Length: 386
Image (tube, rainbow, N blue to C red; front, side, top):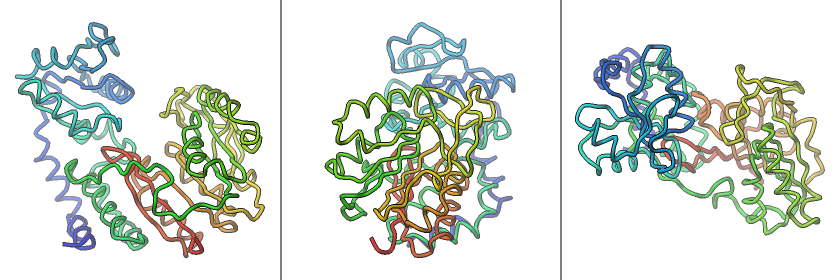
């Protein structure tokens, strides 16, 4: 069965059938009455605790691999080693993997726990399905019954992919969202934002890094280009991240650093200031509940068009749509090579490539997975002349 046939099979399910299937598959309706153990005391675990406590549900314990945390509490909940957690709760508890980290995929985490002793292990996504009103959407994840009505747009995006590998990965990610099927997810390609699907970039390439974090993508770009480039524009709204980015750039040789323009700002449709959740790590993002205010700049007003080829990287934690809207002229006039995250919002996987295609129909699109568990899914748009 080829990718198109697999897509047709997935999208043939009705929302009603999906709702019934999810209800039968979960078997977690008593989850609020059994001992929940969250494996992974980090950002995701804290988020789930805050949401579930509104329903009167609270985990019995956290398990974590970091010895320094053992014997302490996290979110007011006892934190213990995985060995102790399985010994205490393995026979009667439900272990929920609350880790979204390329260093430990769900399948490896599940195997690690089951290797300690008998225990029931599920992904946090199963918990999200069970308490969807409180926990979904989360990143790209939503209930299958809400994904299936978007079949027409999904099929339109399927037609954009330039190679079979992209079509295969596109369908695999859809299957994952519909069935929480970790086994069929694409493997982590490990090639970052500059995969081998692109030819060598021009020595005067202008790199526009949106979501520059601490300079990790700039490091990757400089290595890829052997320090040959025209200019770099770097945008990072989180103050702590920006200070690390600035320190890194200042450590570079002068002939390199003087060609890098830093903006302590996010990117969007128009110049404005918005609420921001400043975390000082890679999860920093625009959020209505954020207590910080950050500047937002449209790329059309910042990036000079000097005739040099442009490489545009967008990984802005859910603000990709607004960033593209603020870069319409840049995309139409310069036809940059684009590396775009398409996993932060439920519809990004298909809607963002469709938006770019509406601006420049001649783009060739590729999809590659550079992470684990449905994360770090990157759409690459290559101009026809490349």
